[in-house]
Image 1: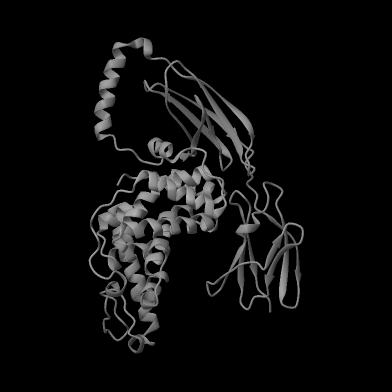
Image 2: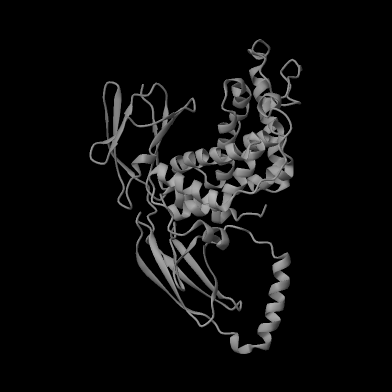
Length: 419
């Protein structure tokens, strides 16, 4: 599989989490094929894999706004794919062993140890290099070994829990590999290519189920544009060299593009929008944008017109390239992105509930994304949320960390503990 641009995908995850349907569609175009192949390998049935793929992305569209680290998106979605296929009582014990590990380590162990995927195949799905996969395998195995060493023999032999090969209990006795229960045999190696029409239909169904407006840019265009890929230029380099020789013979074609960048308006969620209008006789090859060497999504708004929506303040660098490889670059100082997290304006404590009053002077509080995490790791949701009434939680029985985001990803973090 082609390598993906991690930085570009991270921006797509943030924008999709803020409700941008075009960004979600582009994210889907980038990773759906990998997940389809992964599901086919697990269930060995392409028809069931398609059904699970739709269920998987229905979960993603409803929960992507709660993902705390965009760079762990591929691990997160692959682990949810595993859960859909193996969320059964007979696999619960083995599944829980891996779920206690950090996200990146658990998914690498699930793929390599429990499902029999090679290091290369695991790296393809997670868009990671072989060295990173091996490092996470070593770290995950150490954490599993430490977990069982700390737990001792507690219920280990009574319940016949299973852990990966090589993990030792405190008395040195080994236990069996859970891959027998989880994977159920050798991995299904046959390659399956998803049907483009069916993949587009699945995306439309996901938007309908979630109540989102469908993407305005067709999925075929997003797949062909494919700026989320780190392109490999082995074959393209030769074609470009031949094209350069041709252009050298035609100096009249070497003209610089002229373009204008204008601050257009506030985006639908309070983000600034910059419009790039290109004026040139030659077709536009590519328009790219970056902040601090971090690429941003650029969307085609019309003939020779493009838009970019920065998600942070700083220096925005825009580069326009024509098909003749002539480029021009300019910078804009972005200062209009909301960088402040919501503020706590008051609180009220009742007999069995407590109420938080919050406000955000920027783009507003994202009330649907509010949640709390207890010391035990359990996630809690508010009883009710209202801009006028506030955020109402049931009285906690343990210390909580409460997270209150705005619509761009700034988060107010509160620690709640009642004696």
